[in-house]
Image (cartoon, rainbow, N blue to C red; front, top):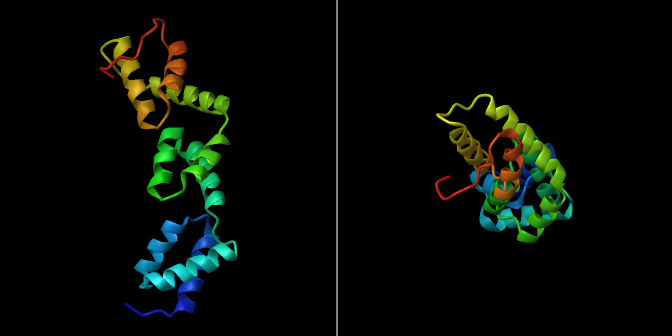
Amino acid sequence: MKQRNESELLHLAAGWCSSCERCVSEVRKKLTEAGASPEVSERIITRLVEEKFMDEARFCRSFVKDRFRFNGWGRIRIRHELQQKGIASRLIAEALDELDDETCRSALSNLLKTKKRTVKGRSEYDVFRKLYRFACGRGFEGALISSCLKPLFNETYSVDEEI
């Protein structure tokens, strides 16, 4: 592998950051893969932050909007993914606060209506459980899931330990 100097690594990272929002951990990983030492990586990251190529808060807001809108993820899953990237809890909370409760409810309701058409079960309760688990896997909160599922079923089911 070709050894790159600090200037080349800086240009590589700047180009990568300018293509879309990146967080510090992603850039650090990319620089390590490109052969940068930890000291060089930190200098490059510091410079990228100073020159506004990277901004953790901006990344966090963008990540939340994109994952909610395009992937159909809920707050729990988004929070977990951001924590895995090493984002500060304060920034995660601020970004998630920008998600409107009614928007989440509407998106989940539409997602569940669409999914219900394809889910097969032995009973209506079985379909309810499968939809509940599906929404949990997408990272939505239990109370929100229950409130969105109730209008889809004739009977009122409660969430128990079995789900």
